Length: 144
Image (tube, rainbow, N blue to C red; front, side, top):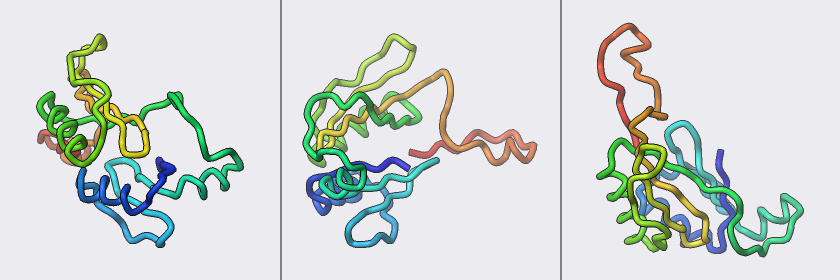
């Protein structure tokens, strides 16, 4: 699970659920959980999460990590970046071909968390193809 500390839980829920279309799970009022392919996203109040980790809640600059979301095509990278910006994200880096052979761009969510949206033509990191597991020859179902 990825848990993000957020300044305003309701605003963040609107961004991820309403803006990006992430499916929200039943959650207690002080946290929001979203189902993603292969993991989950949790949103938790910034002060409360910092208290839980016993660290100061205020920080600035690059946090030393990004969250990467892989999609099935270059055009989908562009679509997700546009969707994020229209929902209130800040575009950090326009989508472009990158040195490792893929295509990606970056945005900051309303709390400054940096997301990379990427298409990697070298491999798919999504769910395994159920037909292949059963000996079939169907294409892998790709999910966002």
